[in-house]
Image 1: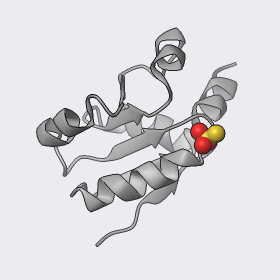
Image 2: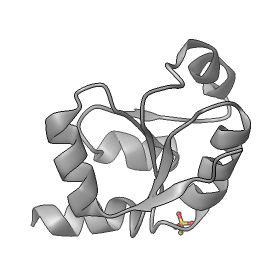
Image 3: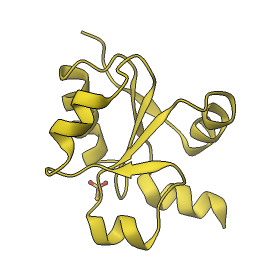
Image 4: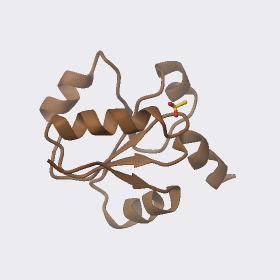
Length: 102
Ligand SMILES: O=S(=O)([O-])[S-]
């Protein structure tokens, strides 16, 4: 079984430019997600998790975003177990992303 990998904000920006098919899932709470999020990301919650897994393209890179890059590691591990091949945890989480934009 592959392991998830770590991804920096810069790596995410580069990959997003070259691969429009990357999937970004944001596991923060829905209120935080709705107030601000990474363009193209999907808020992954207990309610839509099963559906997301059923419909996802497991061959495409999947980036997991949380607040600070800690809980995304567990989520990334879990998503690998569900069959995704190429899973990344965003180091520093949404906060690092936001700081890179300012
Ligand atoms: O979302 S977090 O676990 O990095 S605080």
